Length: 173
Image 1 (tube, rainbow, N blue to C red):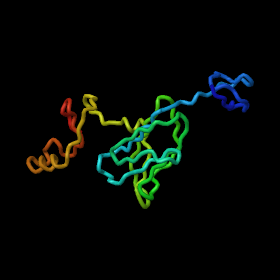
Image 2: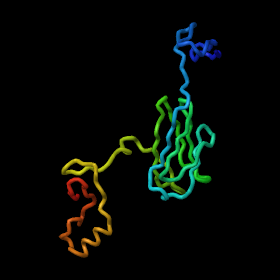
Image 3: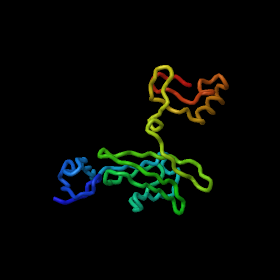
């Protein structure tokens, strides 16, 4: 049993207590080993430089574009910084609960170098859907396929002016 200070009144209380006997303030239990997953969204190899990840000014990992790292931390608020060489890509405060958190980032152009920007969960889960059948099983029509079809058929080709093709129903839009 260890003694800790009450966050409200400052008196020493047992770390096993559910609340402070002096003021009644609930004792906050610190979450141990909550996972933080940092994910740099993009194709592998888009950026070949390593990015160094610091959590609370301690180097914890290195990562490249298209990869992710998971770090175990105490559940609380932490300062996350990422650097590519001397360039500071991102600095933000993140709060982690017992379940852990996933933070996704994408590259955005900066004045002298690229920067990273956090992607919201809504944006991360956004996928194109077929307007005919509603399926999310779609593929992008490649430029080479469009060129080949244009050379063979001309403007009458089914891929002319289209971007996606549904794998379920075959509709192109």
